[in-house]
Each structure stands twice: as C-alpha cells, then as structure tokens.
Figure (cartoon, rainbow, N blue to C red):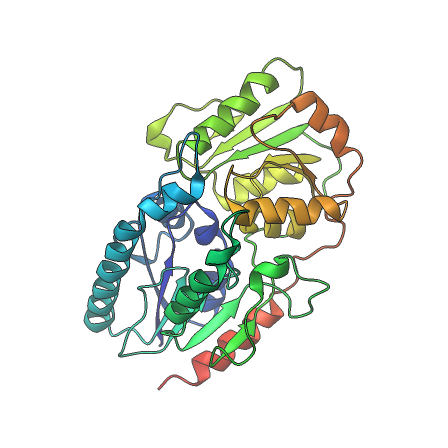
Length: 357
C-alpha cells in the first residue's frame, strides 16, 4: 500500500480545495494518504477527510495591504517566505522519513520535496505576471520560480493541454524543455455539475483569501447586499470559531454544503482566483468576479474571462452591486461542463504510482 503525502499551500483555500479530487483518487487506489498543511486550509481538509493522518507545516501567512502597493508589500515578506520554504523542507523530510512516505504531492509549496522519494509540484502558474511598471522583473522572477520547481521530479498543471480550452491562459506557459516531466492533468474542482429544478438563492457570495483584503471585500459587498431583497448565501474562508453564523451564512462550508448552495444559485460573487474559475467552470455558473487589488494573477483571469464574455468583472474599489447585477446579464457564464471524470488526472496518477518501488 503506497503512502502519499499531500501538502497544499495555505495562501487562501483554493489550493486545499483543488487537492480534494486528488485525495479522493488516491483513496480509491487504496493509498494511505497523509495531509500536511496549516491554517484554515488544514481545518477544511480535516472536515473533508477525518480518517486521514494530518501533520502541521509552517505557514506562509501572507498579508496584503489595505491600500498601497501590493508588490512592495509582498516583496517585503520575501525573507519570511524563504524561511518558511526552508523550514517546510526540513519538516517534509522528517515526515517522509518517519512515515515511510513513497510520494509527495505539493500544491505550490516549494519546500515540500524530498531527496528520498519522488515529488510532484502542482501549479497553474508557471508564468508569473508582473504589474505595469515592473515588467522588467518578469524574467528574473520567473527564472527563480522555475528553478525552485525543478527541484521536483514531476510538474502537474491543473488545466487542459489545448491552449484554446485553457482556463489559466498565459499563466501556465513555460519554456519548452525547461522541466523534465510536465503533464496537464485537466481542471481540478471538488464540485460536480448537478441539475436543480429551482433556485433557493438569488446569489451566492464566497469571501476568502488573505486579510485584510478578504474582510474589505466582504464589507464592500455585504453593505450593499443587505439593503436589497435578494435571497443570498454567504460562505467565508474563516474558521467557525472566528464568528457566529446564521442560517444563510457559513464559515468553512464543506463540499456538500457549498455545492448545494452554488447549484441553487444562478449567480456567484467571488474573487477571480484560479480555483474559483475552475469551480465555476465545473458547475457551469455565471459569476461576478472581483480581483484582489494588485494581485496580477486574479486581475489577469478576471480580464481574460470578461473579454471572452463569460464572467462579469468589477474592481473592488468601485464595486457597485446594482450595476454589477445589471452587467452580469450580458455575460454567458461557463456553459460547457468541465466536471469531467478527471480522466487526465487518473491517467497521470496511475503512471506515477506504477513507477514507485
């Protein structure tokens, strides 16, 4: 029985949620799964897989500015991130050795690899986009990023190989021949499309991501939403101990709860993170996406899918709920169901597992 360590990044909940289908497939194959992480992402996975062994990793715990320059704020935290990478690598080696781990699957945790066993780096962002005025940094930043990824045995991209179908667009581009073993494993969502006869809510709101921008986003939307007669549901990326909840508000909603809510809502308001894009595509939903200010990845994805007439995008600073609701009628939403049987993922899992001693 193979022992697999899965380690998602703690930068929001998306890295943890997209690991759920991977963990499910590993369990189907009678693998012993160990999950390592920290923060709310670990809390969420403990609720999803209570039978699995869990281990603590040091947290990156990024903070975003309430205003000002996002890039400068992130750059000021680089020394902390480097320490975290080194510490999580040491912790990973300890877990591998003490638990006889056969394989590591790391979702964007650069330190979660081992000299003892093969490791997989899971990421949709091999091409880091820099904001205007800092394009000159793109080459050195991407060189460092790819150098870190090359420490891993395999690199998996949760998207389609066909560029015309890609959800991530330019984010998943990389120089040909740069990595030893790269595979596109298809979009990963914990949700599957279901048909509902009627809608229980008018809109589902999902507020997650690092503070303080998560709370700023929530206040901006809720101050306007509470003045309407709309039926709404709120899911927050916070632990339940941090706040009280009402019937139509949840903290860390589990997969079944959140799928039920989104399936019964014709419209979703959320960040434009890549995992959210994959979830909306899997459920075939319309969305109003609000990128985190200054986060180039989210701004790019919001712009990409807005230009294609799929998702309505609106800046957080000037967010106007009434206008956004009107504008959203002009967008199609994701009409093609991406909640396939994870055939590409299954194929790569079988390939890698068959190579283990």
